[in-house]
Length: 183
Image (cartoon, rainbow, N blue to C red; front, side, top):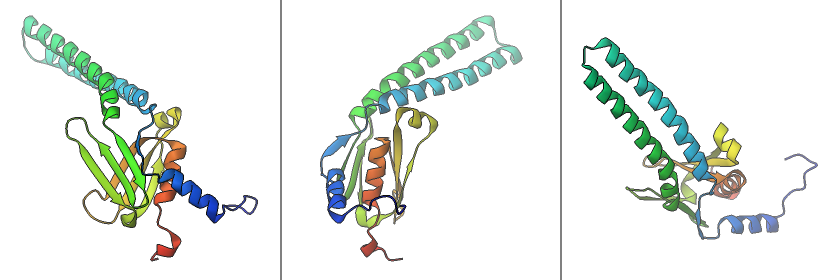
């Protein structure tokens, strides 16, 4: 913080903390759905090209019949279409089953389509936090909050799909307070 910037008062800090730690279960940012869909298109294109090359090489190198080679092409096309379809449907389904809640004691993250999980991170266990943005996340104005904790199970918990500014506010809230800092 530079000397020109006004320092945040204790009252303003308390109000900002209450806005983050309100105990309300929140959904991820809705822009996360098109981000995942765009990522799925990219993955589908890459995997399809790889398997296209495999099918072509198998047809050229091995001595399979034309019928078997045609069956491989059809299998490739069906797999590409199915993977593409699931890549476009899965983000909306995943979004419906993902949420988080922050209160004074810490953060609780819920997610999963088939295997659902609830991860609770007490504030006292938070070692440090990171907020990151990949190129596509930056384009959509989103970020990923990563929480590093003391312990071995879930020592690193990531919460993608947050508005970048909100991820920064959550990061600041979860950081250990100076009066509790041991170092």
